Image (cartoon, rainbow, N blue to C red; front, side, top):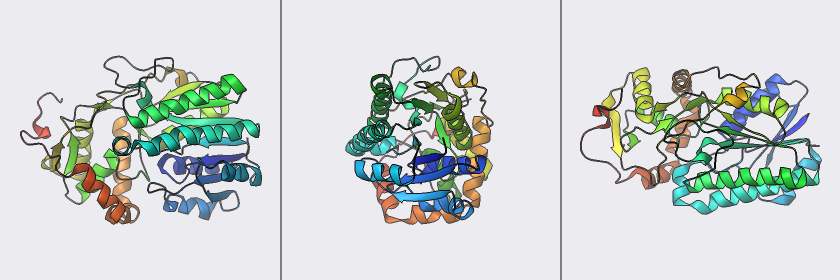
Length: 352
């Protein structure tokens, strides 16, 4: 394992992982392969190119296109694929599900075919806790049924099943990680934490879904990168591993916390009509990856605090994105006319 192809490596988690690998393993070469859709951003990799130019290469391409994928593997002597490439935002999947099926399912198939053809050393799939669906009690184990409830989570579940099938049918050496809600540097500001932080910085309303009591595990992205690294090198071939903090908090508690960190009033919270089919709770049992010796370094609270500070310090990165027409058009389409009347979410007595 020396020449790694990081698909979706110009996105949020992928760019952090590419940086992590190059910093940790001086003998590794990394090829970032990315289509550069709206969420792919070469600014995410600016420091990587400057620091590791002799061991880093960027190729613009779509994982759904077999020939460019094959050509990149051959030209860079790739022996390992780590697949971050995906359409990821649940709200967008509700509006335009076709892109999610194409990229998340068909794109994964294309990569698996390449891994099989070139007899790669490892294929790793980066998945999500959302494939388990709503978890009213307890915590999801890797052996639990997959019951996705949105086009996004269904596409990721389909990809996981394809990865498993290629291992069983063709013997492709695969591993899977299923991550909780990642937050941290370079996350596109349509996602809830960077959206709320950057809105609050500018004293703009924070569009909180419903009563805000949906339960999530907010996991720092660099902890996730450590976990993927460990599974890639020491995980059981054919195995899946849940990755998170093993703890949870409500979206309302997260919102209140970031407002406190920023010194902003809770009056900025604007309840909006809830997401269609919104999963009420996710919770991961992380015992399997703990058995490999991994532990999260950051709690949910510490992850939120570090993330808030990064966005405060890096307005150069997010302001051009949020002022762009693509972002503005999405924001209007997503939130216009969804405001809820009645008591503010800040007055909800059920939240501790």
